Image (cartoon, rainbow, N blue to C red; front, top):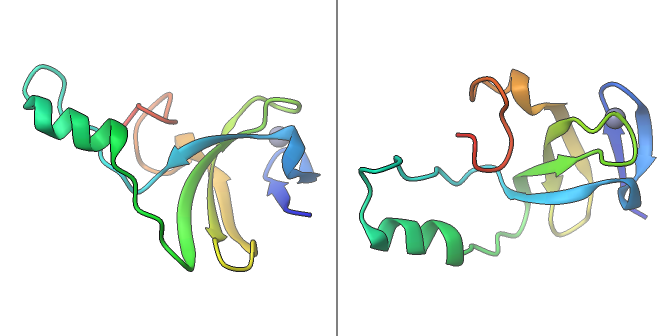
Length: 97
Ligand SMILES: [Zn+2]
């Protein structure tokens, strides 16, 4: 079973979390981006094999958004930090880049 070490709550099963998406994608600028950029952001996804940066929310715990590095081939979890500490600004999480 995938276990995610929440920085605030400790190790928890993935069933306590919601997957929030790919943390490596950059949201287009509000009001300045073309429709094609929004289409690509919303509907096109890579399917990488290996370490991948993802957002997860600990909805059954501290409710914080986390930035998790997970190996998609082995489900090994690497670095886990609070998304708000990831240098993406206050309220960081999916869509707040
Ligand atoms: Zn937590």
